[in-house]
Amino acid sequence: MRSRRPSRAPSGAQRPSRAVLVLLVLACLTLITLDARGGEDSPLNPARSVVGDFFGPIESATAAVVRPVVAVPEFFTTTGDLRSDVARLQAENSSLRAELETTSVVRNRAAELDGLLATSSSTGYALVPARVVAMGPAQAFSRTVTIDAGTSSGVDADMTVLNNDGLVGRVLRADRTTATVLLAVDRESVVGGRLGSSMEIGFVRGGGQMGDRARLDLELVDNSVTPGRGDVLVTWGSRGGSPYVAGVPIGSITRVTTSRANLSRQAEVEPYVNFTSLDLVGVVVDPGTVSDRTLVRADPATVDGER
Amino acid sequence: MAVLRALALTLTVALAVVLQVAAFGYFSYQGVVPNLALLVVVAAALVRGPDFAAALGFAAGLAIDLAPPADHVTGRWALALVVVGYLAGRMRHDSGSSAVSVVLTVAAASFVGTSVFALSGLLLGDPALPATEALAVIPVAVVYDVILTPFILPLAMRLFRRFAPHQVAY
View 1 (cartoon, each protein chain N blue to C red):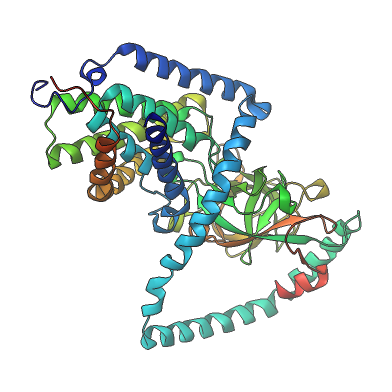
View 2 (cartoon, helix red, strand yellow):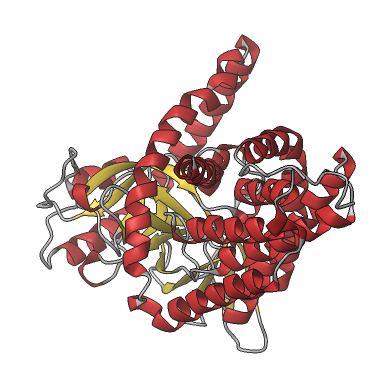
């Protein structure tokens, strides 16, 4: 076989040297050890931010090129499709309106709560608008995305990321022009959640799945409380609004199970956000943040009205 | 010429890594996207052999590990792609270079690459991942990689042939 194409393959490839393989594997193991042992202040963080500054703008540019191409199939939707869309949306709209009227009590209580929390210092939130430019593959087993706003826009680590549907996640790391966001469905993600009906608090963990199977798991602090199906879950917020601000809708309860082993109730939460089709998101920042793009400022009252 | 070759290689790897996260996210199936960097490494292995492919795999894996949306321990994809490059290079010597053997090599490489990555994650507990999820993702990843093989591999292999250092005929 070697004599068949002697001129094409370089001589080095004819006899693979074990040394190269051993060297490369050792290099990988060294990197893994350094990064895993280092934890939060890993020695590889500078390398990460250098590579991030290099790849970030390229990813933003690529996404800007690809986005219109992906939208092409939408041009070919027929009038019939559009009509059925309108009918479906009208039905959805009226059912949502009915829901809104019945939940006004809950909303009032939520507004009171927001008021209490807001007395500390902040007078409202401002949002840095950003677009999702890259999505981590499922093969990496961690659910992260890149957004096209970084430290130059006022985005920093441990900030809340949301979109018009609800909570998206939090900023893990910010480079100059891009930032990495840990989605709420990631297994490592834990969010403090509050039930809309009873104000009970609990912890919401990501299920690790994307697409149709995207689920969050809620574990309530008080075992005697049973969440109802369809109950709305919002964030209860952290001190200083970092990493999560209060009152962002997370999802609704779809299933409740009781485990006899530890007497705690587990509830499955369906997130409001569709994590596979994320596009425009907002990063919650302090209203006084200096940013190179226009901040979306909102009076807390109008935010409640629109929700 | 050597500088040009290095530049072309860097560009190819960077393009694969960027497209994988920035463009194919729109075409993901349950979040799984084709692993373009792995396909490029397999193409390098089929044309240039295990040593070159293992080195390229190290570079490409490191790029995936460090480029933005990644949030795992650095070196895990590098390790996976070094193993893939070496094994695919060895497979080239065992099998011919027919279309079927190329597809089989890609399928095996994709399986081994994703498995090595998942196993290193299980060992490090990064993230705490149940084996069932890994088993659900790996077959989808293999199928997606095989579907893209006819589009990516011929292109990448032609590129690596073109940029192979000239050999003295004997």
